[in-house]
Image (cartoon, rainbow, N blue to C red; front, side, top):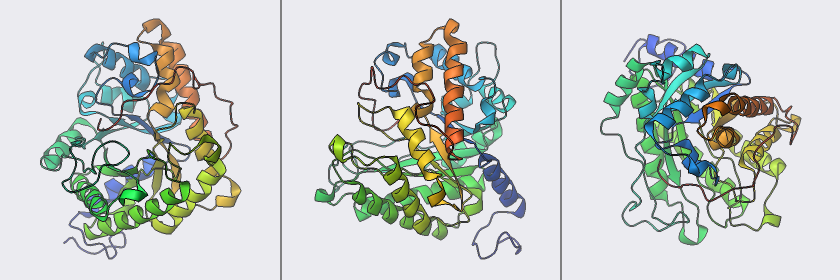
Length: 390
């Protein structure tokens, strides 16, 4: 074990002082005031997960994915609101039509490139676990076997952080999530985080509790607290350096099948989410970045995600011990995608839509976003989005 210093304290780790300093510096940069993540790590065309009828018409080709992603990353001024961009493995090594590396486009625009490292999950699920609202048994993500090597290659290519997502389902009648699924989830994530840190990648830890189902919001609150307590116990057991990581949790929300009139609004979502986090997440963690999560077909995912975040930054919830921000995919990109539609002549308008929503979420991290002030495609054209591993 390396020699004692103040930063190391009582942490049981073999990380060098220099590596700890680098991990902490990356986390601090990602947690800069007003900034969040652009989740751009879809394995197929982002439009296939946007949940919109028009977006699904864009051909999913390597060329289109490259054109779309380069359009995102070169949006003028995006680095003012986005600290990190989460990439798929394809994108990490991809170039734009002019031969520029995607990672260089990102860094030139003042953002930090990162990499999604989980390999999704098998819907056959874990043996002897119940089928949940997603239509399959409980799962655990794949990818630990060659993770060390992939981390090293990603760092060499310019990535400085990583993301790994595990999925948990809620079904009180079936006892979901089971203790087995929670244990598998949190140790899987902790092992990934420890390996990332050994390779100098700051890990995003993402235990996602999906909103599918008919459960009331208080059930999600209880499950979220249980999972996060287990997660940080596992991170401690694996010697993960908390100051050199960030958390990406779900917001506390009612199940999607709850009747519309019984769905709590942003104020309740914010109160229960912040309470769950304050009870479970150590102050040593520099930042928490929410996923937007799936929403009902009659909800505007972009606007709802921004409003929920804004509600968490109202005076009644202050002070917060961590940077509380966003890590959105479709909730940043949906209007942008439908504006772009694969056409070069729409590039400037699509970039303007992305920048506007990024600024809206940046404002939300300060509690100053005015509901409805950022134009969105709304709910017209909403279709069931692709689900499961990605």
